Image (cartoon, rainbow, N blue to C red; front, side, top):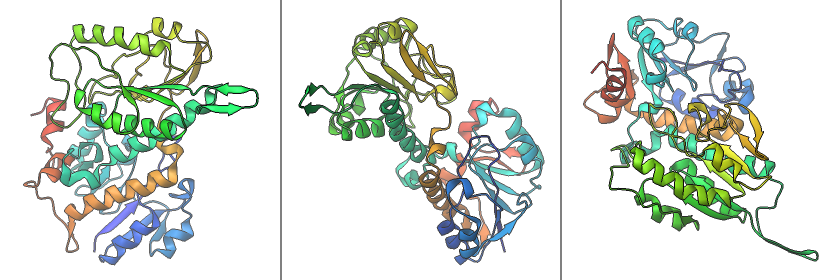
Length: 375
């Protein structure tokens, strides 16, 4: 019988949990045993009683389980508690946590990284990055509206008409598209920019105007659908075009990230200085350095009369739904790995191959091996 363990997240401010009670019940129906650390789901509004009601066992620690299911990257001390041959499934971000993944490899742990799941149609149900990005895009608009001293919708009152707020979204990936949809629902006039021309149709389908920039011919998108870093000439063209749009925006939400690299600089201090007093910037790329030159990760600062938010771990601010979606992504992935009551790693499967970072003392994922320089 395979024993699955769900630990309580130790990262400060991390309120999510890897499995919700419904997912626990699904696993138990397969014949598995599930142990949940006491209090693991409390911050996500899943009390211990809900887990025991689903058939889980409560424990003071679960790191000796056959499979440990986690959300945030484990600490070195947590990883050291995993036994050789155990399986860890969580976000790993191998390029940013080289020492940790090397520790997992030398310990003989099979480590599966949710961020390494390839962006292919068959893996959409396992795409935890998209699930979490969607939550971040939604919450970013609410955070921005909360700090903005204006209505978002147009209002006609006895005292006169209030024009709608102008919202600019930089980056039209999953987070950006959700931000567009949310801002439109709240009645704002929305513009959006992305270096990938292919997303124009998606932006316009949500009721936003696509900001077109005359870029030199260049490959702006990776095979996985992510934005690529621009040439210096294209960066200059982009900044010139965006400066004019940022200047008239009430709320700017930035979402641009490049896998394995610092977030691209999209908003310079000169651009911030040209914004109207009381404007707001919400920088969702703060964890990777930020898209705004004045962003301070984890802080809200005011510069040139503009409020700049650098929130960290935004999905964790909506822990119930974030945990529910993450658990569904995890269960979809486990269907490939856990069959007939046993764990099976079929590296002929593109998803299993790319998502498995370490196995049997070796690095496996071609993407991760390339990032780490071990290919």
